Amino acid sequence: MHFTGTYDRNLDAKGRLALPPAFKKQLEGVSLRVLPAPEKEVDALYVFTEDTFTAWLDSVFEDKGGFQPTNPAHRKVKEALNGAATTLETDSAARISLPEEHRAKAHLDREVTIVGNGDRLVVWDRATHEARQAEIEDVLADFFG
Image 1 (cartoon, rainbow, N blue to C red):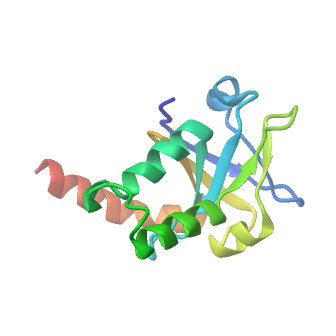
Image 2: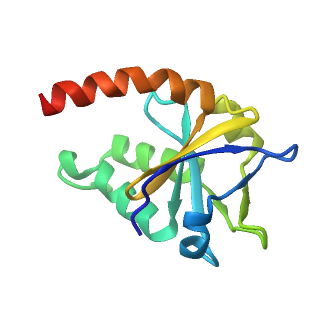
């Protein structure tokens, strides 16, 4: 699966997120893995399918020569990422219930923006996402000259 697009949504009182129609069919009956973004500068949630989560987790160790089970730091990082990931299913209304502790860590309240980022969806607080857009535009301008 390859996710693209930007979608504004509102969480309901129970922390449920209605997935955009563009993703409903792709994610119907698919187990999802949700975790807070591990990067310090990213206050967001990552939403992966089961397969893309496994591939992403493997990719975390690529520049370190691959996961080395005898390396204590590798084991701790892998355990932390697996431990932070929550398995979710979509309900009949194509919603996912974002765990309260994940919402708190990513500073998600009611208004959110979902960004398709290839192998994952990234769920941002809407105000945070909007504030990042100017920075992103500068990065794009520098990147493409």
